[in-house]
Length: 496
Image: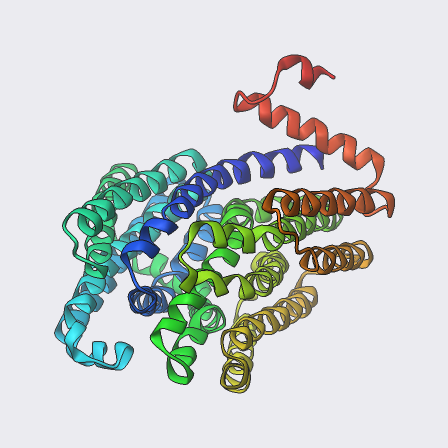
């Protein structure tokens, strides 16, 4: 159990460090973007980016789970190479088809998404970016299947820093406005993807197998609906906000959502990236149920604690780094963070369905949750604006997580116990409510008082037995070893 926890922590830490560095840089750039871009510009870019994400989720993201699943299934190296190469070819064909269609219908798409055909050039740039995205998905999925976490992080950071440098050039120097963001994304994404594609072709060759394609599609096809449903729950609220409010409201909400989404970027996605490769190995072991149960409790603690810290300080942070017209974005952050706590548990609960290869039922779950989300968007956003949008997302993710648990337990039972998890989230809610009442004239004093509330939360978690003393000590051992691995702790400290 301790060895498995160390393995997961090792790779999650690598992915997490990459995301942390990327998000820190991106977060520091928020004053830059909010200085040169208006809320309307922010909203326009958000709607374009979400449209690209929806297309990618429906047409390509199912490839990620398929590659990782079948890479673990095939024992022979040649079979693995054929499967990956086949998916790469299919992804390239899909990317070319979508890019051509997007450019050809750019005026109609611009009118549909942005309510004006004048921004059709923006749509054409996004369509070209989609081609790079499809290839990138396959390359990174292969690296994750091989648990090459360091290389995945290097590729992500290279894309990030090149994009940021180009953004500064295009936005601040050349004054291109929002189109500069699209240029930088296209150039940096294409360059990194070309490098990854060359690496992948050298590793697996360039072959096509119809039988491998059938195998991959049979597993991944149901996940297309799941991916589309996930998009609806994550991002459809922006389009409702544009309808019931303004593009500027979309921009403010997008900034707040991006801050809450950091929980997914820094905790959920790093864990899930290695989790999809490791859960099959754990499932083959004797006593795997107990391992899954304990790992869930550790993971849930990380989710809740991170969400609490983020929610506590986001108001002060946004007030410090953004112009006044963006300050109200803080209101949605705690709700969005809660939503991604539920999204994280959903990703964990899917393990049983993945191991049993029973993904068909997940499509029904996704469709139901998406339908509920659309209904909640209409009711809540029309009445409460962006606050209603955030609560719609949180409620939908909670429903999706609960249904994923029910479906997975039917095909692969895991003896979860939720008593400690329920106590943990109750403590976090109390701590946040107390912290939200703090309003002091001194920013330094306000930060210190909230820090004392977080310390009290940590002590309450320990006192109420959410984690035993033995688990705390073993956690310290794992943390010290990880710190030493990355040169952040002393050998003497590890010995102790």
